Structure formats: C-alpha cells, structure tokens
Length: 519
Image (cartoon, one colour):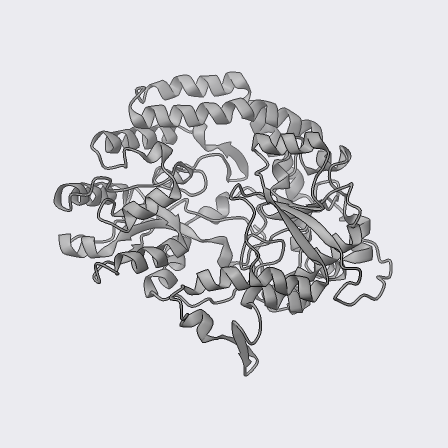
C-alpha cells in the first residue's frame, strides 16, 4: 500500500500539499511544456461556482474563505452540495448546469470518472495541468506513488484530489466511558466476550438504556466495528492478493448472530437503525449510553459536554475487538491515502477553466499548504524558531471553542482538495490525543483495496450488479440484527447475491485491482 512519507509532508510546495493521479503502466506524465509565469492574486475579479458532496446546505462564509479569495484573487459562490449516490446528483446532471468546481467522490460516478469525462460533464485535466497547475504538476513528477493513486488506468487526470497524511488515515474507532469501567472494576474491553461483559454491566449496574449506540455506517463498512472481531468487514477488501466481498464470508453470519443476541438483550440501542449523529451525541454525553463508534474529535466533545455536570466523566478510545485475547485486530478504520472523496473536478462547460485550475492549484503550493494546515499567520499561529506555534485563539479560545472548532473556521484541515499536512492540533483532553495510536493497532493495512478504476464498461456492469446487492445486504443485515428474520436466513441472502451477479462483480474488481498493481 502506498503511504505518504514524512519527507513528502515536509516538502512544502513540492510535497506538503501536492496531488497526483492514478497512472497505468508506463505512466504518461503531464508534458514538459513550459508553464507561463503566474503570480497570485489572479486579476479579473472572477467568481466561480462551487458545490461539494454534503447535504448540509450552503455553508456560511468563514475567515478561511475570505483569506482564500484575498490571496488567489478568485471568489467562490457556494451552491450547497449533493453526494454522488444521491438522486439529486442525477437530476443536476440532467440540467446540464454543473458548477465550475464540483467536489465529490468521482470514483463513484456511474461508469467511472473516465465516463464522466467522455460524456462531457467534467474536464480531462492532463493538458490543463501543464498550463495552469505548476504546483500540482511538480508534486506529481516528484511523487510517483501519489501519481499512481489519482489517475485512471488510461492515465486520465480527472480531479484535484484530497490525499490524507499518514496520521490522517486513521481517525475513528470504539469510544467508551472509562469512569464507568473504573466504578465497576472492569478493564477496557479487548475481546468480543469482554465487550459483552462490559455492556451487560452498563445495562444492569449503570441503568444505561442503550449500553452501546452507533449509527449504521459504523456497522462494519466504514470501520471494522464489531464485525472485525470475526475476521470480516463489510464491502470489498483484499485477502492475500484476492479481492473478497465481506458480506459473502461465513464469518459475517457469525457476527450477525452475535449482534442479534446483543440486540435481544437490550445491549444495542434499540433505535440504532434510524439514529442520527446528534442523537448519538446526546446519549453518549448523558447516562443513556456508555459506548459508541465514532471519530476522534467525538472524544473531545463528549468529555467537554459531560464534564460540565460530572467532572469525573471520562471518554477514552478502546481498541478494535478480537475474539482471542492478545491477538492483533484484523480490521479497524483505515482510509487509503487517496480514497476518492473530496476530489474537485472542473465542469467541461466552465467558462473559467484557468481560474478554476489556479484556485485549486493554490492548495498545493507552500503558501497554500500552510494556510490549509495552520490557518492565518498572526491570527491562528506564529512562527517561532521556524516552527508554527498556535496562538491563544486556538489553544485558549476566549469563547470556549475547542481547537478543532476554531480551525474549522480558519483552515482546511481535512476533506479538501490538497495533500493533508499533519498540523499537530492541540487537544484539551489527553484521551483525544491517545486515541489514534490505539485505533491504528490493527492489520487493516494489508486488506485495503486501493482506489481502483474499472473501465467504463466494467463500471456500468458493476453499478448494475451492485445497486441491487447493496440494497439487499443492508436489508438483510438490519432484519437479522433486529430479529425480524432468523440468522439462518442469511444463507438465503448469500444465494440471492450470487443470483444477482456478485461473483461477476468480484471478477471485475479483481481485474481492476491487478491493473492497478501494474500501473
């Protein structure tokens, strides 16, 4: 698996926030055409339209937006967002009116990103990188590993990517009330049996109505969840060079049997199938729940919220569970350095291609990298002995905001087209800082399926197969956990998956994986 090296992250314009695309055999790098001299800010007062992949509406203008406009000379009009998989995305395509810049997961486009280019929705960026993106171009040339990740098998650059730093690839896992464990004389659970003991104690001795609560995305696809203890995970992954589909594996049935038992006994939140993040937060920061799966910053906000009324409250990370004490978890949460998310494509109909390229390329410059990582010098940080040091606005905020809440206004620390740079953001609670090392201790790396790109024909076939299968597995999973169907019914669902073409889908994935390895 390709990882970002420390040298890359420290390389400033040449690496700290550079981007590269996936390449095929004998990569066809961007040409050596001389790039014209250009300096920011760009003249002309150009305004670009922008959409992202979130359904949260149009964001308020933050200081980072104002600073970006000042430095680049280009203003951005936010139009809200829609995920690639949402019907609103298809309706948007039908209008033929895409924004100048569209941040999304273009690997999920029906038929793949090559097809989005072929159909005239987004630009093939190869020639434009030569002309208008010197920072990205230099990064690609100097970091072939990133180049391999972010272009198609045919060598097409289709978007400016978000590349995670090595530290940024792990950001989620189990979270538990350590103060409850201490009170009950229990250790942080490491095995699935120990989790059962702990959750029973939370229910019976702490009167927790929902001992563990979580959203369905944590069942075993975005993270290993509890499924990882059984040696499986949802969706596609790799075992010894072979692509497998976790929902087909017999161990997944064992996992569902256990979850069904826990649900019957009232250990799993009875509302988990329809719960949202806000509700999980409320349950975790009260006495309703004592454990969840979540992201690192949840630990910070749970401790802050609960300690207002209970100074002894303590939320900590727990390791991903195993079945055998002392063994290393097989799965956890680990993203590819390039997972395809937050990748910025440019509309093929844009009248401002150069401005869009220049605005996006700024993130891969040293100046842009520093802004995206540390915010505005003199406001959120100062340089001391050559090192960025955060100001009191960040570490001792007068309004009581946490450091990550402040930096969300002044920087693009994540989920933005750039190469992420470790910003060493200070946490108020030591439990927050300790979480990533706990969650990182798994064998997940060897199972990661990289950002493969099936051909347009293969992608169409995959979409036809997986649309039905994705709906089927989610239905089966919930019905069995909730007890609406017996665990034995999963065998029927496996046969249905085969009837729907899962074995053909695995063939396509395997072929695309092997092509990726040979790029």
